Amino acid sequence: MAWIFSLSAECGSDETQAKLFAQYFEGMTWTLSNGCQCQCQTDTFQDIDENWWCRVYPKNLSEIGIESPKSAYLMTESGILFYQHLRSAPAFRYALVGVEVDEFRTYSELLEDSSKLSIPGLVLAAEVGQEIKLSSAYRPFSPGYVWLPYEGEIYNPLMASPSLKSKLNELLLAS
Image 1 (cartoon, rainbow, N blue to C red):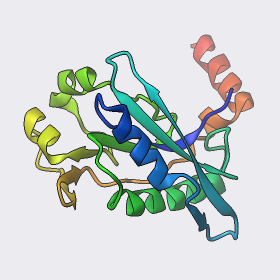
Image 2: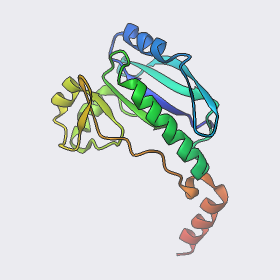
Image 3: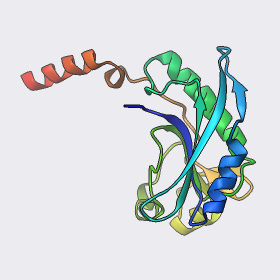
Image 4: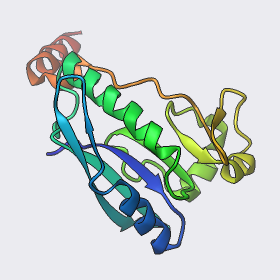
């Protein structure tokens, strides 16, 4: 199973907005600190609320999740670049960078969960933020957008190592 690191943005009910967002990122290239060149690929899809999403993912970056401190570092570096480019991207309602963030919340779920909406890296259109009455931890991101600042990606050995996970499970069963 693939664990894709991406930028996912919900663009509302207009498919054209999602396609414009995808066009902006498609083929965009950057070089990471290890010399790896990452080229962005995109796809668009509709969620169960019939809103359109765009997923942007860098080719040549791990598709098995965060398997080491090094991959966490490189994904964080790429995440920062995603956020830098997101500042001048076409309009969207909300977006998030991370592993498996596709459709992390539908719009209706976002509105329902608004009282406990503290997802680091979440960028919201200002009008969405006003609708759900965000905490004071949200800060300006770019004109018309606010965010809860990105905290980077984290390596968790228990998630990355089946062997360690098995040993922990044995320990838990014994108690």
